[in-house]
Structure formats: C-alpha cells, structure tokens
Picture 1: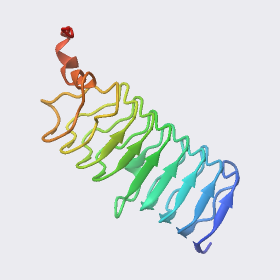
Picture 2 (picture 1 turned 45 degrees about the horizontal axis):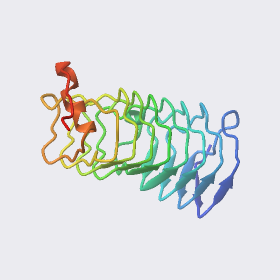
Picture 3 (picture 1 turned 60 degrees about the vertical axis):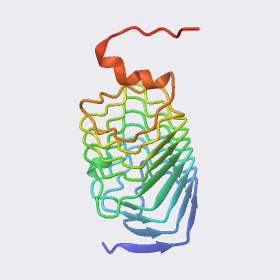
Picture 4 (picture 1 turned 90 degrees about the vertical axis):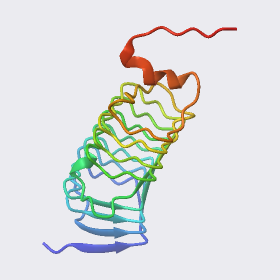
Length: 193
C-alpha cells in the first residue's frame, strides 16, 4: 500500500482508535478533537502540525516523525516518545495531560511545556537545555542523568530533582518549590518570619 502526502488539511473529530489514520506524511495539518487512543501512528510523519483537544493516550509512536508540531489541550497519557524517529524531533505542549509519558534519552532542547500535567513522566537521560516548564505539575516526574541546564522551572511545582545526579547549571527555580532540590536529603525546612 502506497503512503500518501496530505497538506493543509483540517481533520475534525476523527476516531482513529479503530480505523487507522492513513500512513504517509502530514504537513501543516490540524487535528481537532480527534481520538487517537491506542491508535497506530507508527512511521507516520507530522511536520508543522497542530493537535488540538485530541486524545493520543497510549498511541503507538514507533518511528513516528514529529517535527515542529504543537499539542494543545490534548490527553497524552502513557506515550513513549523515545520510540519516535529522533531526526528533527521538535514538540510544543500547552494545557496537555502527559502523565506517565516517557521522554527517555530524547533531545528536547528549547521545548515548551506550558500548563501541563507531567505527573510520573520520565525524563531520564533527556536533554532539556533551554526548555521551559511554565505552570506545570511535575509530581513524581523522574529526572535522572538529565541535562537541565538553563531550564526554567520558576512557575512549576512538585518537582524533586537531585542536583548531584543531573546537570542543572543556570537552571531557574523559585521559592518555595526550589526546596524540591533537597528532597533526597529528607530534611525539614521552616520559613522564618
């Protein structure tokens, strides 16, 4: 079966959980209110696309190329981004649920996570240099051997980052959430008035 090329399309309320999205390359396309829950998106190419209000939970991303693509208001639980095609991988997230997602060993330089739930998300060995976590919930997110240099965490909460196990040079934090850098020491802190 031949792969197709789809450009400047708007796909609204499509249900691809049972009927698969056509294989091929999607350029400058908008997916609005679509259901990709458990969908097979393997080896599809998305370039300059927008996913808005979609459910992509547990979708298969094996060798999926995602280039300069934005996700807004999407449910993306349990996605394994490490299975994506790494060439040109460029993502942006706004108001998304990314709980239990995995970005293991992914290059995520300059990535924006705005108003996202990232609970128990795995960033092990990922490179997040110059990224922004703006008003995100990072409860039990895993940062292990991650490059967090120049990452802005100032408006985010619930992170626990081991400075001895991650690169955090020039990262930005704010009080009181910066105390998450001390979690491994199991110490108590008080604010003096």
